[in-house]
Length: 263
Image 1 (spheres, one colour):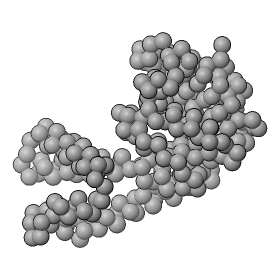
Image 2 (image 1 turned 90 degrees about the horizontal axis):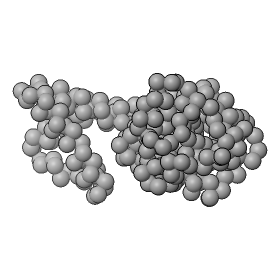
Image 3 (image 1 turned 135 degrees about the vertical axis):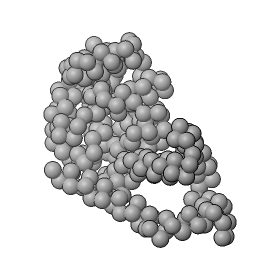
């Protein structure tokens, strides 16, 4: 029996993608398998995904998602191709499609994506690109795989390093801001338990408003009355170059992704 899809790597991202695939009905429980070498993790996956085959070896398959660490991608890709996969989708940062194509040889469509951790709650952003020779059907397949965990955008592979620096690493920047806001609320005299709830909802509400209306500058202006409290706070952020620091963080992460791609 050949599985329609095999997810190689049962870590957080692999499990998130599997959950999205099952919830969206892209594959059924009997059509997908997960390859996970770590025995305790296999037990956790079996408890979470009843009816899904969890194994430590790549079984015969039509396609594969490669959700392992970047250094392991070439070997895992070769294993998938040897098991019959004609499409592979890598979620590893910095590993180029050219590297994967060299590992799998001819006859295998190679695609690459950069998702982010909000995929764990179905609200991720995944950028998708394909190696030379991939077809629209290949890209459509990969988009269906990723759509269960959030938004999917198609980009040129040359843009994936920038995606890594922005939305791949971006959750860490947001969480750092959340930490700072929570600390500020406590310093201002609010109970931490209350502050944590308030800041989480602040980010949820602000994100929803931005998603629905767009125009972050306009939304900021809507909150910022001349001479008011928000204007005083924003002035401190601008004086301390918070905007420049965020731009620099994205650039640094982008540069590091390029370095990883060069090995």
